[in-house]
Length: 250
Image 1 (cartoon, rainbow, N blue to C red):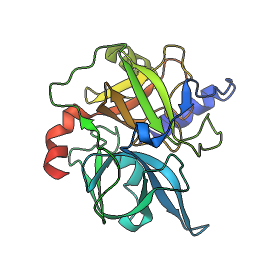
Image 2: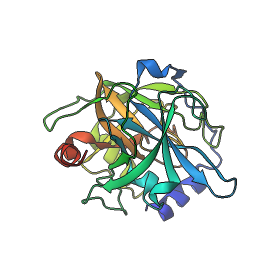
Image 3: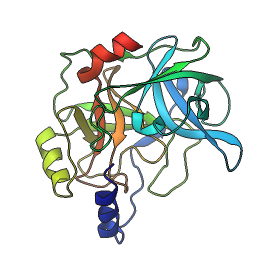
């Protein structure tokens, strides 16, 4: 899954300065009550810790990335809901089942969207509106990213919920830049970041919601290993491309 190309990119960029994810600010879960901290079991320490992000879409389902959960059994994952903190507070939900978009391509990450069904009914908080089939977001539109991932490349994980203010990036420009390192941006993907780099999703943010005018338009899918690099914005699965499957299965 892009492994060889990513390794090459890291080698090329190894001497470059590591940029802090800028534009990120601490926010309270009450402002974004649909954001879920996804906790993965670490067999080495015998505990669950924050590893990915999702968004509540109804009283039993969380939308996230297949890339996040595909290699694990269901009992390796839980969801902390209703807390601004990654490791405490709120309500921890066990998982009942994972549903993967059947058109997902593991090599390109095209169609990277999953539904996590919780064992208990979700009582906390609101659910986010989903982008409909005809929902269009213009280039350079302001969007919001939410998550608990690393605060910089190879940096520490954030304990507190963060938001970053990004803009949507022109699709053709994003494609051309990624083509230079032999990585493919499809029409089912949305690029978002900042012109100068610095703000991006990072390790621990896969599956994070990308929000436009209080509507969920994207699910954080993949990026270069060095998060926040100029000219290589984060790549998100477009929700509107898979809305029929999401609504039928959520």
